Amino acid sequence: MAAVALFRHYIEYLFTPSVALGLLIVIGPILLSIVAEKVASASAKPEEVAGCRRLGLRDHSNLQDQHQPLPAQDNEHPRVQALFTYPIKSCRGVELPASRVQASGLEYDRLFTFAQLNSKQDKADSKTDSGITEPSGDWKHQWRFITQREFPRLAILQTELWVPKPRGRRQAARNKGANGRPNAKLDTPAAHQRPRSRTRGNTLLGQLERQGSGTKAADTPEIDSWAANGGCLIVRFPFEPDFNPFGLRTEIIELHLPLSPTPQRSEAKRYETEEVSIWKDIPLATNVTNEIDAEALSKLKYFLGISNPLALFRVDDSHKRAVTRCLPKDKPEGEGYSVGFPDAFPVNLLGLPSVRKIDQELPEKAAVKGKLDARRFRANIYISGTSAFEEDTWTKITLGSRIGRDKEGLFETDAEYHVACRTARCKLPNVDPDTGVRDRNEPYTTLGKTRKVDEGAYPNPCLGMQMIPRFQVGAIKVGDRVEVLETGEHCYEKMFH
Image (tube, rainbow, N blue to C red; front, side):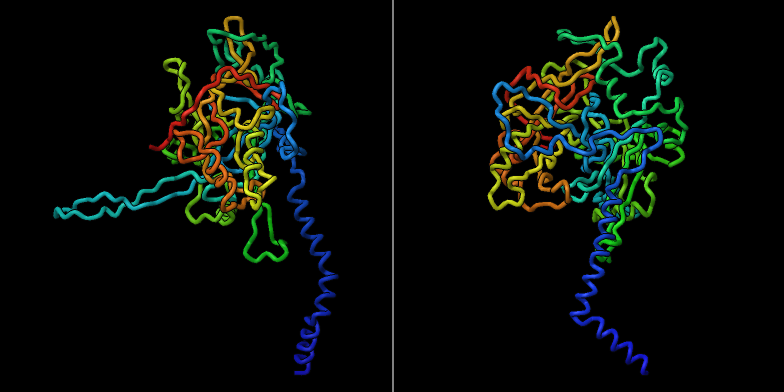
């Protein structure tokens, strides 16, 4: 009994205010150092992915000065200020110095999407053997894509792109067809071809192949290597359990996904081809959820706040969705356009001065006033050197280069884009791209007051432009000049009537 009384006295003494303060002074710095160490380890440079090089900017952003005073625009031409590709729909993007561009958009853009399984009871009636009509009792199940509109924490799922290193002349030879030319589908020249240059192996596409590769990789990657599977997409997110004092139990979860899986990997991982709903389209796509460990998938669902079954889909290149709205008036018969998992069009462009103008129009009490981040609008191409909303009038531009082929071989020339329509906006830009926290009002409320400028999109406000590449293979880099070929009026064509 004496021992119990002594222990009780010790506990009471330990938790007196003066002693507790002393303990905090002693232990506090230790706890802070542990937290700092965990944060530093989470942001530390990751290990190299064997046989691959990392794409994207790491130590700086071409948008880092977006809130600085804009320079005078006299005699300045519009130029590319920043480039982004978004490997997983609605997740954090990868900022690039340059990118390949395909007919369906920037390379790796919206290549994957998360989807949840929605279930609803079939309302159709059925007749029993006795002829009595009663509800069928059947349920319909459908995978449907998810975005920051419903799950804003998708914004803080970080993505890293690792692509195979160039493998020298032997690999280049393997990539050629029987006639010695590359197997990639290339354009034939347009009827009125602008000045062009022969490639002679020094195109921007060639520079993209070479950038970032300091060493020569092995000529033949192993069948199970990331390089053999088109590279690796790394996804990271911080998982915090319910009880997490001082953040000490926070762990960084990593997912590793093949960018272009081989048939052998597809079979080994038991991929399935299933329908997934993307707005009004229900394309077939590849369910690659088996690439994710069951425990990691459970933690991801908890992190996002999802209770339904969750899956990850990759675009099936043979089942892309057709672009059917706001097409070029001079579209040749039989020419079609397609996308993977973007909402509607292959490429989105936005002028930074337009974002600055919206920022200026925000109410003084708005939390984002003076610091509206252009990344909220998730464009692929950010433009500088324009006046606010100048891009609204563009209907045809050239930007970057395209690679074509004629009877004399390969050539490089200007890449032409059809500026299809304005971008109709929802409340997604209310999500802070750094925190995944959604503002209740801004900037959507201000957009609604100032940017209902397109009768076709009404009642949605508009900001930015949707574009369709008029070529098969091309490239774009920061600093490229935009040449405006045609201007005119736009009228948005709605997806749903």
